[in-house]
Length: 171
Image 1 (tube, helix red, strand yellow):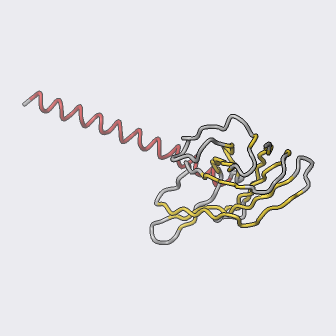
Image 2: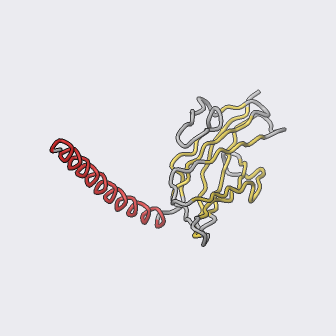
């Protein structure tokens, strides 16, 4: 009987210790969440990749920014600083509208499209590990140096952010 009672006491201590750790994690998480909402919209990573990622952080950087004519430009992006909106039903909504431009290295805009893509997420938690796979296919573009500019517009606020990816088309 004594052994069982000691085991119960040990389990209770482990449970109390786990609960204390969770309370501390929740407090720290709330502080990060508060800083997140105040931060500007930006990107933790925005890189050309070999193939679309299947999950957050599971990307393989492309070894070169040189592409063959008609080859897909694949980009992996980790947005930071977006805002969640309460949907009123226990869910939160967040997401982005994405614009793009293609320009020359000296800044001359060759083309682009506003509201090119829309990414919407629905969650019960304030997810901060979110990624976006982007695929750009440029046909008929001559060999040369270019810059791909993506602009993210936060659906939950008036925040926006742009990032540039220099690349070369070479036959």
